[in-house]
Every structure is written in C-alpha cells, then in structure tokens.
Length: 261
Length: 265
Image 1 (cartoon, helix red, strand yellow):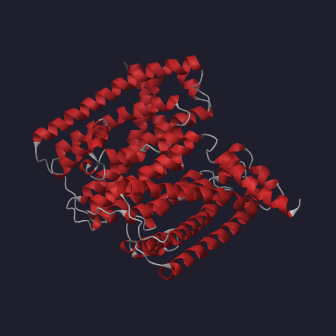
Image 2 (cartoon, one colour; image 1 turned 180 degrees about the vertical axis):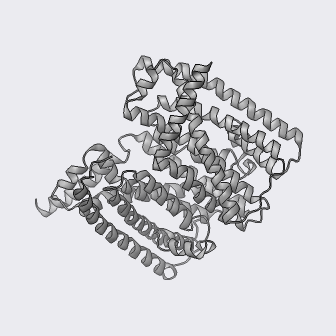
Image 3 (spheres, helix red, strand yellow; image 1 turned 120 degrees about the vertical axis):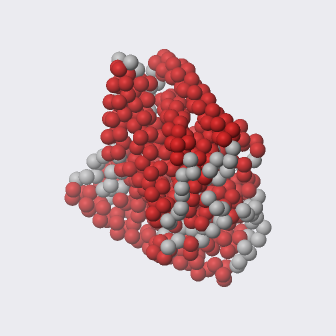
C-alpha cells in the first residue's frame, strides 16, 4: 500500500517540477486563462445574461484545467517517447499506471492554479460580483470534479501511449469538450442529438454542479442526481482505464511499438 | 543557374519545406490540425455568440473566426519553420548556404499562404452548413481579395515570429501567445471598440483586425469604395511586418552566429 503511494507522490512531485520548468506549461496555466477570460467576458458583457460572470469564471477555469491535464497527459507521453525514457518507465518494477497516476495528479494540482487565476482576473480586473451561494456543496462538487478530471485524464494518457499522433489528437480535443460539456453556455442550445455525447463526458456534470452550487440550487433532488451521475461516470472512466491499460500494455509489448516515433 | 531554374528552385523548396515540416507527411495529423480543430473552434465561438447575443444569424462570427483560422499556417506554420529546421538538424545547413535566407523564407511562405486560404474557405463552408451563414450579398471577388490580403498580412507576422526561432528555444510559447492574442484582440468575436483604449491601439497594430472588419462590411453588401482603405492599410501592415521580419532575420542570424546558439535546444 505504502509502496504505490510513494511512487505516486514521487512521480507527482517530479512531474510538477518538470512541467513548471517548461515555458509552454507556464503559458497554459498562467497566461491562457487570462486571455480566454478576457475574450469571453467581453463577449458576455452586453449580453444581458444576469449571471454571466459565472460562465466566464467556471468556463475559463474548467477549460484551463482540462487543457492543462489533457495537453500535459498527451505531451508528457510524447516527450518521454522522444527522450527515449518511455520504455524505461514501462520496464520499471513500479507499475507504469501508478507512475502515470502520479504524473496526472501533478498536472491536475498545477492546473488548479489556472482556475484561481481566472477567478482573480475576473474579480479584480472586471470587478465582477460572484458569491458562492452554497459553499459546502461547492467544495464537495469541486473535489468530485477534480477526481473526475483525474479519471478522465488517465484514460487519455493511456490512449496517447498507444498513439503516435498524440500531438495532433490533443490539439483537437479542447473545443469539442468546451462545446459538448456546456462549460461556457448551456448544452440546451445545442442540437438534441449531441446530448448523449454531453452526458458521457464528466465535465458536463461537473460544470452543472459547480454552476448550481455557486448561483443557488433550485432543486436539491436534481442536484443530488447530477452528483450521483458525476460519480457514476467517473467510476466508469476508472474501470475503462484499468481495462484499457491492460490491453494496451499487452499490445505495445507484443507489437514492440512503444518507442516508435 | 539561369533565371528559370532559380524560379523553379524558389517554388520547389517552398513545397518541400511545407511537406517536410508541416505534418503533410502524415495526413491524419494534417486533417486533425487543419480541418477538424478549426471547425470545432468555429462552432464553439459561433455557439457562444448565439447564446450570449441571442442572435440566430451568426454570419459575423463565422466570417471573423474563419479568417482568423489562417493563423494555423501563418503563425504556427511559418512561425515554427526555424525551430523545426533545428529539430531536424538542417538549420545550420540553411544558415551556411549562400542562398538569400529571406528569399528562402518567402518561398516557404507561399505554400502556407495557399494552405491558409484553403483553411479559411473550409471554415466558411462549415459555417454555412452548420449555422446557415448568409453570404448572399457578398461580392465574391472582393471577399476573395480581402482573404488573400488577410493571409498575406498574417504571414508577415508569422515570418517575424519565425525569425525569432534562430535564438529562442521554446517557439511554442511565442506562437501560442501570438495566436491567442490574435483571437483576443483582432475583433474576431466582438468589435474592437469594446476593448480598453490601450488594447484597441494594439489591435490596430495586429494583422487581421482590418481584414475582418472589411469582410464584415463586404458581407453586408458594401463595395470596394467602402472597404478599400481598410484593405490597403492591411496590405501595408503586411509589408511592414515582412520588412520587420527581414531586419529581424539579419539580426537574429548575426546573434546566433556570434553566440553559437544556432543548434542549442
């Protein structure tokens, strides 16, 4: 038990040090949320929508968090492959998925900075009023959302292990999630056929919970249902990760394609 | 080498460079980066505009975001040339060759300008299909000229950024900052007048701001007389960026030789 905890913590700390030493990562965490908050705030400013600051802060924060995790998960695998260390990590006595979990955790912790920056920027620069109506439920929703993002990024990381086009894939995974999960606008404005795609993505439920707990909950029954669905989707993600990981590990060992650039 | 061979070489190296450095060797990457990703970006901003402003007609956002998408070629394609050459170990050969570096650079921009225009057209087509964007009042020749000038001006910025690749290691940072700045300040998704005054001044120093304004006016049925000033200013801005790129290339080449940093990752 303690063994894998040690591996996760070491991997997490190393990942945070390595990630933050890259200028591009610092850009994703520090600059990108500010520019995106600026764009969306100015777009919403004269919209007449009452609680639009919530969309700006939650949308920017969640999308930055998602981008940080997603881009890093993809980029880290590609970097390890490029440096020739992916095979070494795979051959270590510690399981690769434990190391991967540590990496994803490190990225997530750093990604939380972007949420904070988006909040401070909108609060300070635009002097937007944002009170959290239900702080306790907001914190619970927030923690569940982060755990869910962790599960989602584990799947991505393991899929990127298989793909040699990780960079191309990661570049086109950002906007679909922002659209389908309703991070900046409600998913109800999208065509109804997109709804199933929205429902299988955990950021949809995370955004709903965070939005409701900040702006005020109309129906606690609905809120509880959203929370249960977020947990259920996250558990399914973890299950998929475990199954995928075993299959992909076998596939890359048999095919000897791990380090092929 | 006679004149004809020189011209042939000019175009040939542009095509080779484009194929080698811009992912065309792998069509999957090309499709994901140049077709799928821009269309999703367009859908995102048009949906956001539809929700925020409650408008059914989002032609304005289709136009703005489609023209902006040329940055994939102009900023990321041209901006990353030097850094990519370094990654492949060919940068020192390019610097050592007696051929004029700037002419070589311009040759490489031709394919990106062509490809950038194709991305803009793909996005416009997607905008018409997904959002029913209305182009019924558009003067096609004028609109095409505006797109060409927009991509040319943005190429100037890309070449200026690309020159920095001789001395800067992390070009991704510079290119992404430039791309997001264009997205934020060029008035793609809202009129530039909504920005604070100091940001408005920056907007008008950037390529695409005037082209996007001109394109909106053309879509409303305006003729050449109404948009000529904007288009000419944009073309002039593009030339200024190219000249700045030329000077920067000379300085950066000198610095990279002097500091021996050409091949340092």
